[in-house]
Image 1: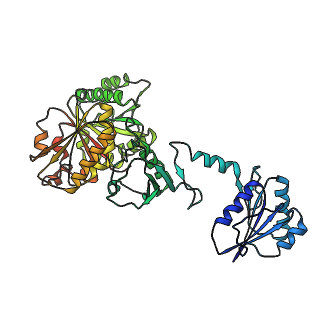
Image 2: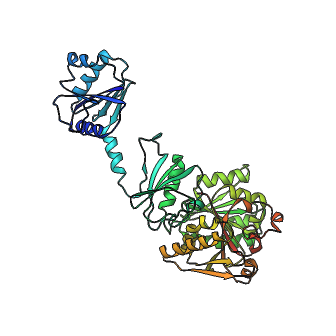
Image 3: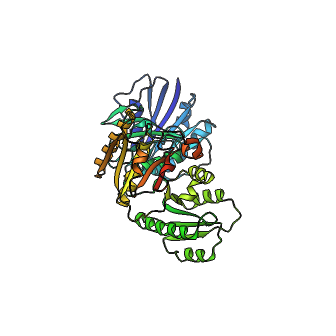
Length: 468
């Protein structure tokens, strides 16, 4: 049985004792010292021993400290009383662990005395009641934010998503609270509005997950980043193609209203460089790379430094296997701009496949189509019956209701790629997965429309990472 000494002379101390009385444990015996005794009706006499005396009296406290205590807790309203009580304890017990409720920001000189800052605790607790601020467990685990609870708002990007399709890398959904009831997560369980999610993971990752859950439409390219990035390589593109690319990138920039960084690699054409430099403004930054750093290192440095959330490239740049792999490793959406008008685009569409990667990026698809004013269409190849497809369609219909945006489901038994080639113009939305990094030669005999993305290379395409 462990003996614990509680010294109280404050209202907080009395509340603390009440809480201890109501907390069942058969392993501790509590010795409570108060200047003025209080009555605790539920206190078990076998577990609680009460004393009424002044703990600043060394003589009186010394008699009690003849016993072996594992810990002392002090909650008193007078700073002088606290200091003298600690002094008395140290006169008898040099190494006894002391926990002190600190209302005065006392300087800690004794390594075995823990000062619990009252004002910090109150401020932290009040912070938990602020909207759009994550609630983290401070007294569990490391207390650094590796355990977090998040309320899912009605317009969240996580609403009506199945847990099994949420990429949980270095974090996990470990519990769901719905209507004040605990629900254990499973791959088929769907997240509903106003669900309270309990998350466990790396604190830095959970901060990103929190922002993603709270994100609503109109915030793309968040949560991937906050700015746009145009990738220009003069050694691989014709000057006229670069000018067309710039014009379309500026149009996209105006729609998303985020800062645009134009990065020029391998500069060579002087007239074209002059043209690009004229595009500088408060919201457009031109960065010409004259360094000897490799393109890959320079690109990844820019993504971090400029907090990039969308990378724009030409279709010729995206064809290069090494460049495509570099873009994939950045884990940000990539917009591949084709040689077609972007300002006249009206439709964004996606092809349903046998996997559920499309559900992972569904909220981003709605966000992009809403900000750009696109109609949204899902193309379902009916010759491939699959339960997952039905769940994805259900998910998209639910999101369409939440975001008040119509969606068209096209059912067809024809080859989707061959049929889409008959369309004049559209933006194809695809999950950006590892299978798109490989060489096109390896997918010649594949029936996966995502692996065959290059068959629609003449159209604009946006590739969205499935991981946060």
